[in-house]
Length: 99
Image 1 (cartoon, one colour):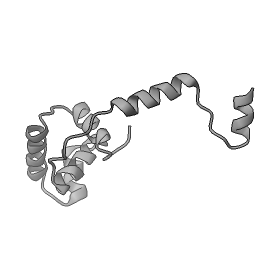
Image 2 (cartoon, helix red, strand yellow):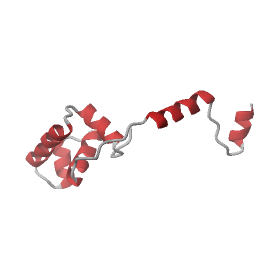
Image 3 (cartoon, one colour):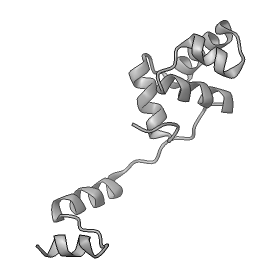
Image 4 (cartoon, one colour):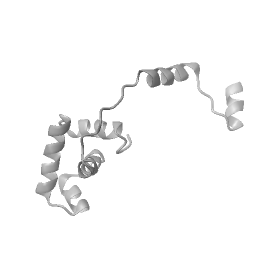
């Protein structure tokens, strides 16, 4: 009941279990290695993570489809990731898109 009253007054209420999980995650987080991508590669990765096709990315950025395919290939090689789901996870970790 006290938590409900606090929230109604504009305060934040977090259970002990949630607070412990947040603190543990913060204390055990690992630093991300430096981002090896160029600005254009990050831009293309963001589009991939948002579900755009190669053709849509090319149209959006005013580039050729072959150019986007080359960027995708370089992204996979640089990051050693394959598949849209893995691209998406990387983009979310780097703050390029949200889940």
